[in-house]
Length: 331
Image 1 (cartoon, rainbow, N blue to C red):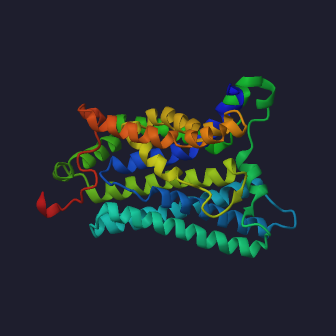
Image 2 (cartoon, rainbow, N blue to C red):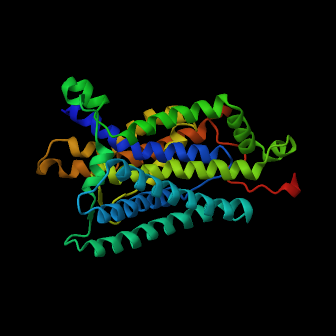
Image 3 (cartoon, rainbow, N blue to C red):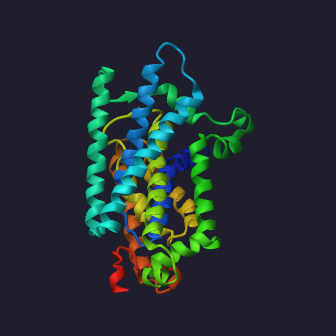
């Protein structure tokens, strides 16, 4: 039997990067932009934060490490790195009207290469005997939980044992759902995603909204990469350790039918499926079974794609202009 008290917090911790990536991509896709570069954006967000944290820890080796700066510097670096990726994507797809699928895939390749290059460089600078960087001081700041969580038993362990970035992920998802549905900006953004020509005729600046949504979405997704390194991985960076979480985040967008609120539950489900093989009984007889358990998230993803493609309800469909460049002259 699975120990739920141990499994649920780990599943929630695993779900946070997926939720950041899913929320960011939903915001982006609501504007009609299909950003398949989210895995690369998350990678760049992670390495940018690592660079900032590494520089600050090296500068404070004498013992003058200030926790507030230990959080602010990598957080700002991550947001700036992710923002630049968003601006690059928008320049290519909105301004130059390049193919969104090709651009997104190219940005994923670029982001992973960018992260591995600078990650490898930092590993050499640190003089580590293993191919990793350990940023323990910064990680302690990001992963610090509420001081009284341990005194509340199972409730504290399940609900209060996470770093601040985990709670921000859930807050952002809830607010994104509210903003997209209940605010004027959300209404304009959805109008741009559904029919940019009509939105343009109504006086809405289509390009501005596409830039705005994509850049905000990339910044949100980049925080998922930062969380994974600084909190979930305890401040340890190693090249290619992020895995395929960025692609799962994109799949989650379809799973939760472009609704950030549903994305919270979906990300926890996928987070649990992603690590469930670690909680099955150990032993030689179960080794092959563990390999099958590792396949579960991807099997579920394929099933969801099939089911979603069979739905005819309009509310469950993607924005009508998703992935289609807007030419004002053809309005």
